[in-house]
Amino acid sequence: MTVLADAHRAYRDDLLREGLLISMGVDGLYGRSGAFEQVVEGINAAFSAVGDPDGPEVMRFPPGIGKLQLEQSGYLKSSPQLVGTVHSFTGNDRDHRAMLERIDKHGDWTAEQKTTEVALAPAACYGVYPAIAARGRMAQDGALVDVYTYCFRHEPSIDPARMQMFRQREHVRLGSETQALAFRKLWMERGRAIIGSFALPFEVEVANDPFFGRTGKLLATSQREETLKFELLVPITSKEHPTACVSFNYHRDLFGRAWKIETDAGETAHTACVGFGVERIALALFKHHGFAFKAWPRSVRDVLGL
Ligand code: ZN
Image 1 (cartoon, rainbow, N blue to C red):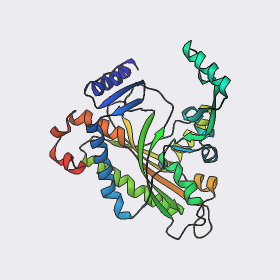
Image 2 (spheres, rainbow, N blue to C red; image 1 turned 120 degrees about the vertical axis):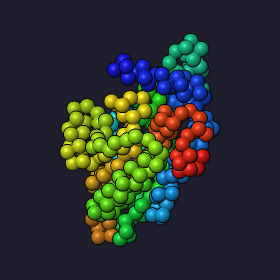
Image 3 (cartoon, rainbow, N blue to C red; image 1 turned 30 degrees about the vertical axis):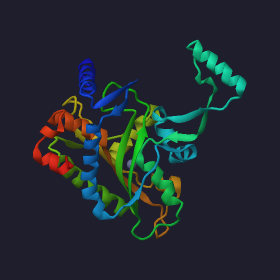
């Protein structure tokens, strides 16, 4: 573990020294440089080049979702340890003075902070399900949505590829079981092709989400046994512990039931999503091809439009 931690720290130090990431004083929270963002935009462009011809409906959500929406999604049951909620000061003048005094004494000023209606989005697709559900029964084709948003997961780490705030670019498919599974199969081929065109080494494996606690172990086992989740892994700081850069998820009717999403036949919708972790892919590109993208292989720069 120490070797791995050293590798994480070394790569993070490199990225900070090169100015690609900007320290914000918190593990997993970074600014991005212009060059880093150019690469991220290139990854998005490569994703769009493949996905846009499907004609997805584009939705862009802020990095927050309603606290009630988070509850309804079931995420609090499976992954409470990753959740972030937005708090705000709700006291009166006296509370405010007391808070400022505590700050002066370097004490805890957060006692007066109360949760708001807003939670942070744990995944880009969480805004999509309630939005589609609110429209009533879907058409025969179901729905296909393109989303891109900042997500939050509370897992501070010195691994630059495990950020607390990061972006996911996703396509989300809602429809019948057949439609959801066909979508995932198609994107597993496309995901391989896209990452291959970036000249990155990778493998695709069955995976599970990092569910919480004892119940979480059972959830993870059944998720693997039913092959609901696959990940495309790229070695970034370690060959033995490659990093999940793309995930291909089939949720069965989990979100369909949670949000009462119906197919045109009146059945509970099945859903699937493909998510590209754009920061992780950018970090893999910098690791494998060097810190200056102008020196990357021509073919890779062409795909990324760099
Ligand atoms: Zn998703």
